Image (cartoon, rainbow, N blue to C red; front, top):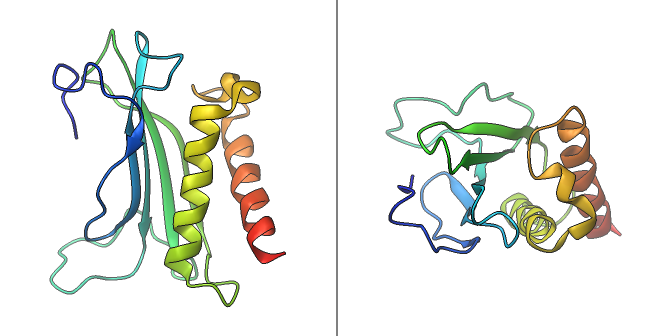
Length: 144
């Protein structure tokens, strides 16, 4: 994870992938620079050789997990969960990792460009259903 002081001016952007991580984004959303920093991460749920721990609460029939967190600038040591969902992205002829990457890129787009969705960049009573519907909408478009 990044320290707030080191990333004070970092805009929300894609990070390098490694190991279990398929896609990762981190930084400040355009309207949130002085309020919070967001982290979006998609990881596969396959067991890795030499790995001591399995992914957090991985369900055996699901292939990928998407996490979305934020840190408020006033409490940079505290990480808030905005969304966590596990999905089966092996439902088409498309490679599951490729599909999960495209879905994660779409979620990053919503975070960056979704002015109509600004109420969903912080946790609220509709957060889970909003982000699940966003994933489902993108998957549906990829299967069409």
